[in-house]
Length: 112
Image 1 (cartoon, helix red, strand yellow):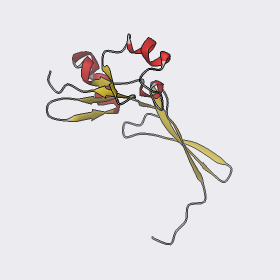
Image 2: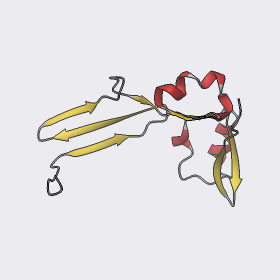
Image 3: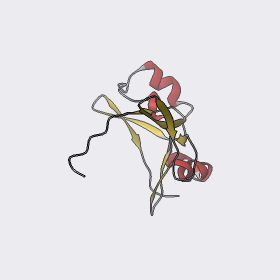
């Protein structure tokens, strides 16, 4: 219904490796399960020639598609390309961080 209001609070925990969603209604707090019934969801996205994979699907095939699977993105949010933290961590990531006018971006190569 268009006129209904939600009287609770929803919180998203954007984690480096896993994320989750919590709802607070009245005196009750609950973690919302994802489609697989898990209370945490892998913070992964992967690109192939044919599709974009997210969550468990992306994490499960990461070893076969390392350069096109992005994770740890929380470590990059709001940081400039020349941030020392970015440079240090980028050495351990299989995906490529690139400079776009001083901002950082992740390069996706769409072939396997």
